[in-house]
Amino acid sequence: MDDSKRYERLLERYRNGDVSRRGFFGLLGMAGIATGVVGGSLTLAGRQAMAQAAANPISVRFDGWGGVTSEAFRKYAFNPYEKATGNKVVEGTFASGDEFLTRVKAGQEGEYNVFHASGVFDYARYVGLGYGVELNEKNIPNLALVMPALMKPYREVTNGTLSAAPYDYGTTGIAYNRDHVSDEEVKEMGAKILWSEKYKNKIGGWNDWRTRIWYAALATGQDPNNIQDMDAVWESLRDHRKNLLKYWTSGAELMSLLASGEIYLTEAWSGRVAALQQQGHNIGYHDPKNGFAWQECLMVLKGSPMEATEQLVNFMLEPEVAIAVAEGQNYPPSLDPTKVDLGAKVPKLPAYDATGQLADLTFAKPEYWNSNEQEWSKMFGRIEKGY
Image 1 (cartoon, rainbow, N blue to C red):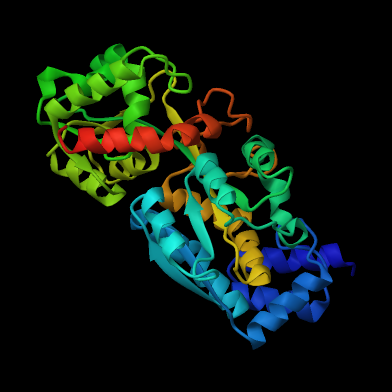
Image 2 (image 1 turned 30 degrees about the vertical axis):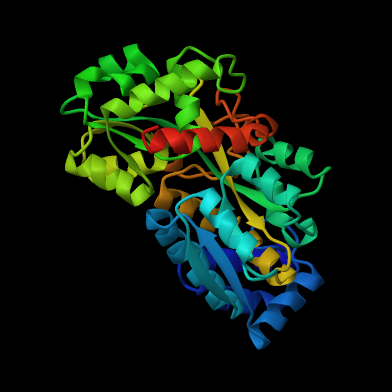
């Protein structure tokens, strides 16, 4: 029997639950099968890396956003990876990209390995500061399943190479309590509803300077990627603060404020809103025109144990794993829907694009936002404190 047929039989047994993931890898090795877990090729170096990892377990640190996202990673990616390889995934969490960057700057090289980065502007920041690496893409064959539209902006930053693998995408739209706010009102007013006097002290907002400025640009009728009147943005943010109950600082706090009815309106992450809806809360969600779309990636930092880290990234990109994580955290995966069957749930998630082109989503231009970060983040910090 040739390799491909033996592989297909083993894969069928694994998917039916007759073989554990660890057993699946073991049987592949015993059979001498050179076919990858998801259609790519498992090279001799890859098999040797697996054997070496089992004999000499390595710790790989992963830092993420916490909450349901971390729960999904642990259940669907980290636990199976540890069983399959013998390596250990050590987890950390952060509330914002700025907070994590502060930790990396204060730490030692190699202390932090992989983190769930907020898209291309985070990627460009870390690369610019010298924290990037050049991934050996031969060790990550599942990159072939990732949407080219998501990889292109990363490659443009690092001259065709990658220091990260795109992993998921979503939007920061408007979440609202349908018991108090109608669908029609949100669609008619768009971003301006977050400034409504009618809902004073029932409005929340993420204390992230980019998101605040993006929505203030929308509310003042400007292109967030080409703002012409920053004075209008700052004045708008001061007005927004007057009607605000509070700035929230994490996804868990966002969900708590909406679920409890403490707030009726806020911009919110699409996946967290989907989670609330699945829990039975009457929360609506609307992406206004030019709303804030984003993608996240698994960024590998300088000083990491590269083979083990690349192996982890490849494992997390396996369709079985990536789809399970997507369903767990409610964000579409980076996998190309024209190449991979994403199942029944993923196509129903907010922001999902069946074409794989993402042409209808508006992403932040990294050079524009990063070049203004120092000035704009400082100014928003003053407004946040009431100045």
